[in-house]
Picture 1 (cartoon, each protein chain N blue to C red):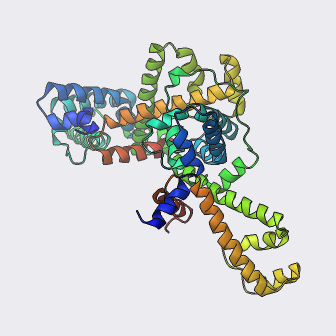
Picture 2: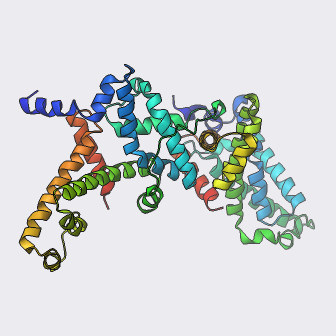
Length: 243
Length: 230
C-alpha cells in the first residue's frame, strides 16, 4: 500500500459508518445512537421504498418509523450481513429482511417510542422524485442519492448563512447544476450590487464546495476508499441514468 | 439443479408421455387451470353446457392422447401451450360439426347465435388471460389461508385479506386496527409481510407452469399486466 493510499484509508477509518461497524456487537450505547442517527438521515430512502411497495402515505410513514425503531436495537445482525462495507446496502438488506419476516409472528409494535421523523416533505419529495421508478429498490437508491445531495446543499447553505453570504448563495443556488443563460450574470449582479466576474468566481467556488460536501456526506456511509469510489459511481449513475 | 427442474410443467416436459409422475403433474395443472380454459371457450360463444363438454373432451384428449408430448421443452410455458392446443381442439371440433351438418347432424348449429352478450366486450384470449391470472392469485390466496389456519392466525388473515390486493387508506387501517385491538403500525407491518408472503406464493404457482427462469419472468410480466389493468 502506498503512502497516499494509506492516508486515504485512514480517512475512512473515522467515517461514521466505519466507527459503527467497528464497535458493532460490542453493545456500546454510542454505536446504537450513531446508527440511529445515520439511519434517520436516510429515512427518506426507506420511505420511498415502502411507498413504492404500494402503501398509502400515512401507512408508509408508520412502517418507516417502526423500522427505524427496530434497526438500531437489532444492529448486532450486521455481523451476519454479507456486505457491511456500505451503509446503503446494509440498510436495504436489513429493510428487506425485516419486511420479509414471517407475518404469523406479528407482535404488537410499540408506538410511543417511535423515532420522530420530519415527515413534512417526505411525500412531496417522493411524488416528485421516485413515484415513477419501476421497483422499490430503484426508488430506494434514487432517494438515497438525492438525500446525499440534499444534505450537502443544506450544509452549503448553512455555511453561506454563517459567513454572511446567504443572499449570494440563494441567487446562485439555482445555477449550481447548470450554467446561467446569457445575460443572467448581469441581472443577478445588478440585484446583488456586485460584478458579473465576481459571481462567476463565486459560483465556481460554490460548486467546488458542494462537491466536497457531497463527498463528505457519502464518505460517512462507507468504510474504505474503494467502497467510496464504487458508491460514488453507483449513485451518479442513478442520478444521471443513461438515455 | 435449478428450481425449475422440479416444477410440474418441467416434470411433464422431461418425462414426456410415459411416466405416471408426469401424468399426475399434468392432471393437477389441468384441474387448476380449467376455469381459464372454460372461460375461453365460453368467450368463443359456446353455450355453457356445450362449453363444459368441449372442455371435458379437450382435457381428456390432452392427457390421454399425450398432447403434452408435442410441447417444445425450450419454449416451456404451460399457459401458451395449453391455449394453442385448445384452439386446435376447437377448430377440429368445428370441422367435425360441419361434417356432421353436411351428413345431417346439427350438434353446434346455434353456437354463434348464443354468444354471451357480456362476453362481446372482451376477446376470448383476453378472457383466458384474465381468468388464468385470477386463478393463479386465487390458488396463492388459498395456500396463504391454509398457512394461517395451521398457525392459528385465521382471524388476522381474514381481517387483513381485503388489504392484500387493493391498497387500503388510513381509515381502513384504523377500522381494522380497532377491530383487532392492534396498533396501526403493527397492522401496517403485518399487511406488508402478508403481501410479501402472497407474492412468494404467487411466484411459486407461476413457477409450476414454467420450465425456465426466462419463461417465469415472462409469465410474471404478463400476470402483472393483466392484474394491473383490471
